[in-house]
Length: 387
Image (cartoon, rainbow, N blue to C red; front, side):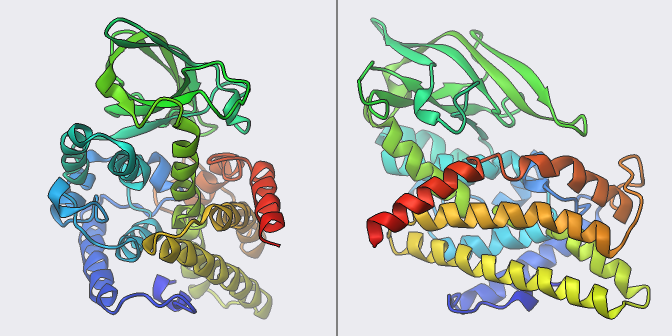
């Protein structure tokens, strides 16, 4: 199933993206032939391959939307969208640079000092600096404003104490943007600030959280008196909540929220082509494709809004809710359309192995990036305000 069959609908991609898309596909064909791409589900989360990231960066496909003055590509969000959806559709190993490219870079560009921009952004665009997210805590995932990690003033800057969890890639990445409480305000959304923390700091301890598959992707991140200078503060003290919500719009609206399991759907179509496809199988695959197309159109609308500088928080939440539910339901549909024994110990890249990977990853689809129940509250409030 080539991604091109999904169409572009109401959001028209710039003409130059056609050539860009073909360039990315040619690159992916070469990488696939070299054995670096296995087309596995959820590769944007678990496929950590810094060498692959550097090859993307050499082609200008990391930091695409960052300004040229900071080493970026100076291209638009829609061009970036084309590149990342092709990478996701192929199941490419992109997790090394994913957070840095998707949200850390844009956040530093928007809220950072000039010194921070000049230090971090060229390295992100070069595929040489990787970031993790330091938001969630135990009992403070969906209720993010209740975080208990504290940043206290010192003579030289700040001291951070607390524990973050679900910090993807903290054991292999370079930095994390950490949300911490800097003031005990009555308003829980006030008094929060963000800090850029070196993940190799001696007062920072990483503890693995393993997936059902046994993979080590997530971590507890114990900040045990991490000392920071003032230049580690991102933005102004107390502005952390506004900055985080801006990041979440980027985190929730991208094609990774509905394409995580596309490699499995692609593999299903490949399997069915080798047999006589029944009318029921054909119809069910068609319905899945139609749902995928409609969610993609909504996601493209968010990308277009961001391109135009318009707020898109509510629509981003809608993409995440619809998209991640679709991802999980797709796994169940595939199991019914083509009953095959899922085997995690099967040959890598085969249909039974891809199915096993998708099954074991599926519990996280509607949790990461904010639970769908919380997102529906955001959508409801947004609709009430607009009515």
